[in-house]
Image (cartoon, rainbow, N blue to C red; front, top):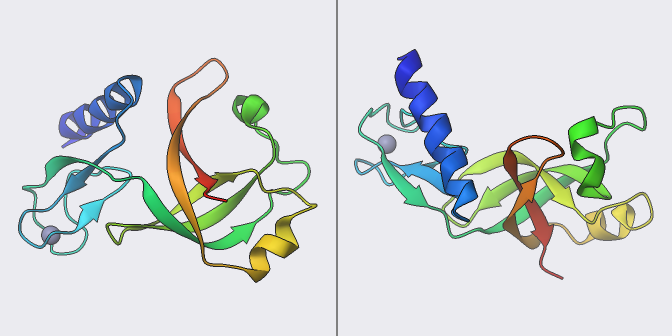
Length: 136
Ligand SMILES: [Zn+2]
């Protein structure tokens, strides 16, 4: 199981290097796992398949990071918040939302849910990761 999990993680990061954002789709029930995990959390099937997510999503909540919690690997990320994001495929996850600051957070929060889309972000000295940008 550990080996399979490592393969899933490696394939996910390889995909990001190629500009693809990959999840796993369950052929049994159609549920999409993102970030990818091997088994389907909806029906328990282990036969999930690679699936490139559309990237379109809705932000449902926004939470500003605590002032002292700045992570060094996010140094070049700019202003951001954490948010609950629902992918077009129906999967909900907690993600980093770029472009949200103390200045515009209240205004944006009043308009939730807001459309957004996935983007690939190069972390300082590390792996690429997936963040979300607001569409407007
Ligand atoms: Zn399933």
